[in-house]
Amino acid sequence: MRTLARFVRAHWGTLLFIALLFAGTSYVVRTKRPPGSMTVIEAQAMDMSQTGTPVGSVPVATEKVRAKLSVPTVTYTGSVVAYNDTDIVARVEGWVVDMPVYPGDRVQQGQLLVRLDSRERSARLQEAEAGASAARYEREAMQREAEQMRAELEEMQRKRDSARAMVEKAGRELESARQELEMARAEREEMLAEIQAAEANNAYWQAEDARAENLLKAGAISKEERQRTQAEAARARAELDQARVRLNKAEARVKQAQAMLGAAEAQLTQAQREAQAMQAGVQRATSALQAVQARIARAVAMQEQAEAARRAEAIVTDYTRITAPVPGVITERLVSPGTLVMPGTVLLKLRTIDRVRLQANVAESDALGIREGNTVTVTIPADPGFRLDTRVSSIFYSANPQSRTVTIEAVVPNHTGKLLPGQYVVMEIAKGTPRRLISVPLSAVQRDVEGKPFVWVVQQNQAEGKVTYTCVMHPEVKSDHPGKCPKCGMDLVPEKRGGKYIAHKVNVTLGDSNGRRVAVLSGLREGDEVITQGNEYLKEGDPVTPVEWGISGPKRLPEPSGEMPAMPGMEHGGHTPSPPAMNQHQQHTDTPAGEPTGKTVYTCPMHPEVRSDKPGDCPKCGMRLEKVEGGHQH
Image 1 (cartoon, rainbow, N blue to C red):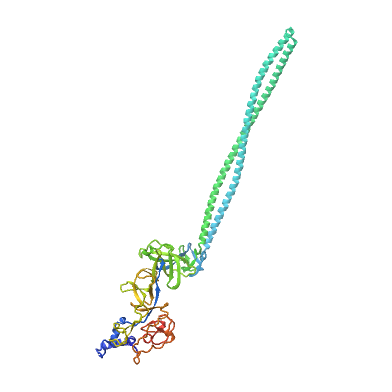
Image 2: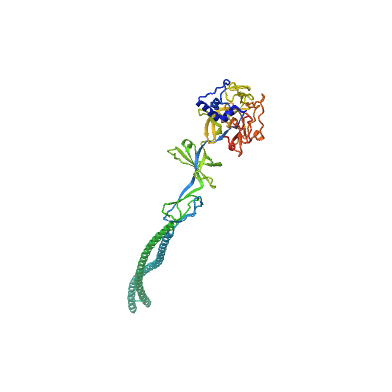
């Protein structure tokens, strides 16, 4: 016979329909029942949330808290932004004749993306190249002419220098001739004076010789005296002759010097004329060279202009071949081959994703503690296995006036293409300085009706082994021994079964959270064992057993403490039968609660932690196990 609770749970819809039918027809069925007992309708109408479901030891996951040196972090959602968003734009007018790329294609820097019709541009380029060649030939001709004129100028300068040297030589010879003439004239003057003295001396001795001859004839002097006077007269006559000869030579030297002077003057005059003529030739050659150089300068300017025009046309012609400025991925193609495009038309969109920017909009209060170089942990909610550790590379020092947030950015490599532009990421950003903190998983924190945070910790049970009995339908009924409920007559069941550990509520003060864990500033001490899973429905003093916990629930259930109490419908001859035998899987299930197995799963409505892959009865309360579709409880 099934318990009343299971009956009510299984048939509450039918009972409610009967109750409404009876109320509509004003037909009331009155029966005699014990005081305090309830009709089926009353049982259905009561608040089942206030019933004290009998419990054993609750399986929980725990963690012993330790103070660790850690950096406070803040967690924000962010987005992946391409390192570069490049619009591939046409720079010249033309028809699109080839576009060898498509969205999704990876391209390298310099790879051809679009080719425009280049025939008109090629013709203009050829014209510009021809103009540049003509200007170059004219410049080269001018330079050859200038070289020839420069050679002529150098020859004229050489001749001019030679004529100047001849002028200088003629000048020196003229000066020498003048000095010679002066010396000849001085010698002639000296000879003239010498002749005058020789003539006077000769006249004296001639007179003396004549007197001496007379005296000799008169016998006034001796013959020796006469001979001596005669010799002096002959010597004076000879000296006069010699002086006249020297005078003649001096006269000849003077005439020769005068002739040399005239010749030197003539030579100097000729040299000066030649030098002047050479100087005039040099001037003419210089003027002609300057004129040619001016023409060369004009030719150089024309050539440079022609070369510039050629280069400009070459550049514009190159614009008909549009290549990738940076490596990346084509994300959009906006035109197709055969389209006439104008300058400024966007042809393709290219994104650089070998490096990407991870950006999060951080509140101003949090941004104050973040610096460039702070660590950042990046996860992708859509990919639980993804984790990337990087650092803050940039802080946009300008708050958004609407959201009052500051953009924090981390540039990371993305060679595998795992991160896609626009992708949703979670960024845990370090801020502040490292300090020793106690932290617990967010799953360990609960809040009371006032919103104040608290956690459950595991404590030693001081009343281990003591059992309190209560009624399933009337939890206010308490007893320290088995029996019947005085209100409804149902068998009392254990309310709390004694065990080694119980749950104790501790109020805490929380600090920063990184989305997985939260810092506890007060309320906990190192070594406290905090309940992190299985704490949803705990009450103060509930027995708990720490067990290994999986993703979906406990990997094993704790062994029941004490004997199983008798449940309604399980009495046979005044004794409590043992729980129905279960197969090995029912007794020792390794499947976490709520974990899909791919098979039909059965569980107890009152003890959802009991799970089996075959039908049967609950080993705790004896209720029939119910099927859970797809391995999940309804």
